[in-house]
Image 1 (cartoon, one colour):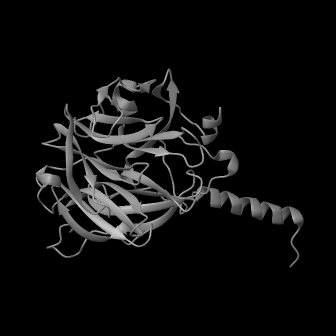
Image 2 (cartoon, rainbow, N blue to C red):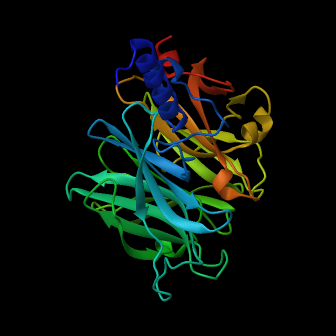
Image 3 (tube, rainbow, N blue to C red):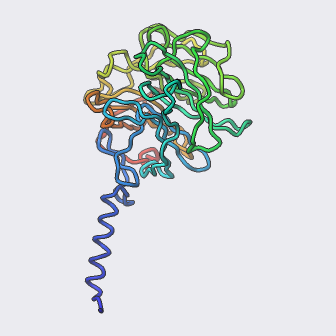
Length: 331
């Protein structure tokens, strides 16, 4: 049967439309829309909460909590070349079916962050671990390791760094490849930092109190030799006002500056909570503020708030935008 050119073009257009609906994004449509539903390459909602991003071999890897309505289902990983379109790479760290495992079903794996150790050639994941069916009483740091960015990661151990409780956390690798663990301790009243061992698998005894002001959700970046630290208050799942501290050394002293948020609902961090600051590869002084807009009634449906960090009078400024593109860093 012969098919006319017009019918063939119509069929191609319909097929292209189906692919777009499944999650692909055309060049023209590439933009960040904070708080909107964000689909992966399969057309499924990205499920990577409280996470962080690793850039290696010209690829971004997004690690985050895989959540059910309330359950912790391990750590998911997605990959991207452009930050707009994400490929679902599966589960980086799975919950264990062994009821005696520290990462068995019924426990919590939160705030996962992954860094790469060039000496050992290993990918190292740290996270906030709560033991199965123990609520939030354990307050431990968990560590897992992998030969590949996408995993699977093998769970190694958990502990309280130098005896301190460890809940909300982040990792930071400085210019000299030294890694640090920044974490909430003492029922979240303290924020601490510890230097990691050379293999990134353990905490050293270089462990310091940064400040005591009931803060969590740390996110850190560095510009022109100055460190910037954004945190949130401790109000459960409810959003609150962010704070910004600066220091010339990661071990402090840290100076409280002001809330860097600007725009509608800025006093509540746009109804979100900080999780990570992403430096954009190949762009000088280009950073993205990553936050979660938590939905405690359905954690899987928690949304992502990604916004560009701008600088005004030498201070970071995070202004709400309904939609924005990476090109804004060139302006």
